[in-house]
Image (cartoon, rainbow, N blue to C red; front, side):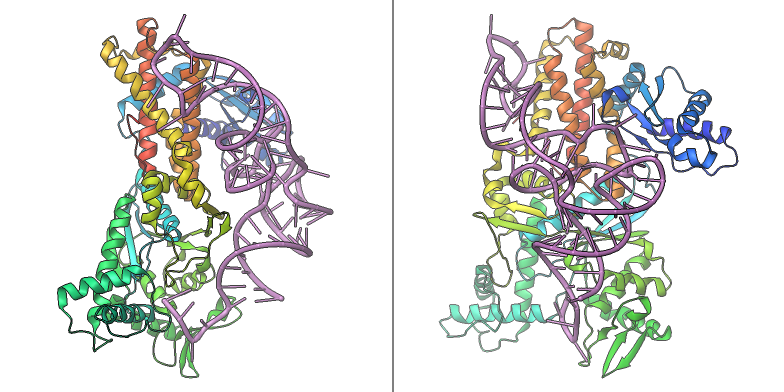
Length: 543
RNA sequence: GCGCCCGUAGCUCAAUGGAUAGAGCGUUGGCCUCCGAAGCCAAAGGUUAUGGGUUCGACCCCCGUCGGGCGCACCA
């Protein structure tokens, strides 16, 4: 509907003002019903360019517009120079037929042919995923789903590092628990992992490998056992959240295949890397930073920045058109370095896109709660899902803009239960199916498209308009990487449905009308179901 | 000290630079002999932290101030 209006406005304006570069035409949905079903501020934007008062410009555009009366019943000029449009009911009826004819209504081809890579979670395997990782995981997965519904192909990737200091300490921690299980007095290493899962890993290792490993804390079996079991656990948790990764990428491969070395050589060739004090530095001052940054320490060990750059080069070389990174706010200062490097290495840095989300503040018993994986005083994602379920967990992380701090009150989440907003959407869907089941058992419903013209009640027309907006809602959420926009949309659809349900009877009405309203129910159900699917939330037909 | 993010109803949060800033929770009061009351309707609640600026129009953009969060390592 938007595209139709934009095309007609564009035609009219370019005929009227041939020499003028038209601004992007925007269609918006007025808040006040008396302002119609769609509005544009085109005349206001053109007023300066064409040197005429806005209302005159609006009048000229309206006079020049060639619209089908089957689609638009009125074009009004209002306020400072808005043009308001009213949709014809018959157009809405056609839209409902479109919805009913297309099982995957909402999918578009806007991003068809574009290969996306979304990298997210990327937690090193040192412990179970916590609520802190939850926002990352759910945001990344949902953005990937949105791209898919917008027509793109998407690869979900998990990037990890199993070689660093953290992992060494992890192995030593397993060793300590292993030795302790044998009755030996071996303390946890400095900064070791205190979580109970470490003892479980040690116990499992002992069951498989016997008691002979205690003498050598550096035996790689400790670390390997930990990594294996923790990854299994992480995958199980993601699975519960309806998240499936396509690829796992080990940072170590960048060393093995020479990517790290190659990037360093190229940066040196461009005089962006140099030696000083035994270390290799990245000339970030060339990109406006106050200080240069270290790429390789004097010990010969690279900092994380170098593999980060090499990894992004690798992603682009692997043939992805756009690579999205999902980052917590703490990474905000480092990714510009990666972008600068990518650009100077000959790639378009616009192909790297970053979704930054603000931290989750855990509130427990009314006070902010400090968490640390190492100290094991965290709340795991699994524990959270045990309490509130996967649907509520996903919904909770998605319902707010990524850019705002998310306050996660454990007590509130636990008692949310039936009151939780996600149930409002699921309830609407279940209610529709309850009526449909009854309608089927009555056996009086025929699917005759012309009956749709009986849908004329204001509540019916409002619901139809909202349903027709669904594809645009998905695109808006996808392009902005803001899934909460889709939640807001679905909420509006549910409100419109409940209002319709309240105002209009379905069963027991005159058969033609009952049939038409049943079709409206089917269309609503399809939008609700597809919308919830995009969010990774179940759509139960009974609850 | 420098950089980034955030300040909107009592609380948690919405709102492409658009018209009268909206929901949920909480509070108050209505609505089931009738398709699911996990619902609907209504009331109350706001100088959008603050002072300037930009323009036809600012919660939104720019500058300052105040308050909160996160970064500013040869840690990841």
